[in-house]
Image (cartoon, rainbow, N blue to C red; front, top):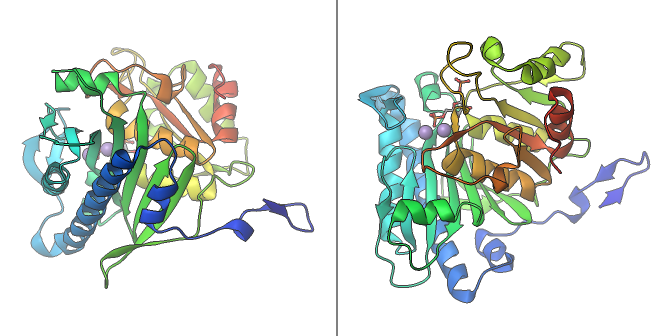
Length: 347
Ligand code: AHG
Ligand code: MN
Ligand code: MN
């Protein structure tokens, strides 16, 4: 990194564009066979992202902006596109021959696929923020690749035992542009869909949280009375920080992505136990499909993620649909949240 005359650190002098293939080639930690498996899985994600992006754009013309009339395993209303995205990604990932176990927010049980050779477990939220579709707002798809291990007959147990062994995380953001953001252990890269060629073309990177950690805070403060004193104390300080800005789209992928590029923090706390609080004592977001992938991407971009007590990437998992409180963003903003709310400071 270099400094300009005013002493401000500038990254872009060393920025480069790496194709997805080049990025996978230089990622640490993989055998040759695993690298091929990662490439084929990410190619399936890219193909699915292209397909979902195309269908989302036509959604309003086909009347596909709302509910399918069903309720998912989380007890939430299933939007028509949740199911479309589920089918697209499950079909492609299953057919890749590189995903032995697939768990999804939209399926109660894992899907198991035969894999003759190197493979990974994948957890996905096929369509995140789908209630935004009613207003043509941004949505996303989230994926985490977990290292598979031999000898576990029960696919749920197998993936639960691998949650601290995440090797790659990806999200696709469907917004003004369709972007794919990919992270390996130490680096994050960003790709933009060129609708004409169908390719995801590299943007300059690596992507890091900006110096100073940024000023954006994303939290649904309508839930204030459901939170403990620590989280409330943090929210109270927002009013005295004139430099901070509140931004909340209600789609984790979009809120996280903005905070990654501009600097900031996304917070979805757990509620106080029922009676005092609301319906999500452990938080609303899901550990395997939402919190872990975003935590992995944040760490690779120089940021942090915690549930308020422990780093997200160190949490054990007991259930594939487990929910968790999520505080994720730049190192500076997450450490500051922990200081003000009186929770252990992550590092
Ligand atoms: P999903 O559409 O996959 O169920 O996820 C929605 C999540 C997340 O994307 C978003 O940040 C959060 O729910 C918004 O929740 P509130 O409306 O409770 O703020
Ligand atoms: Mn989601
Ligand atoms: Mn979803």
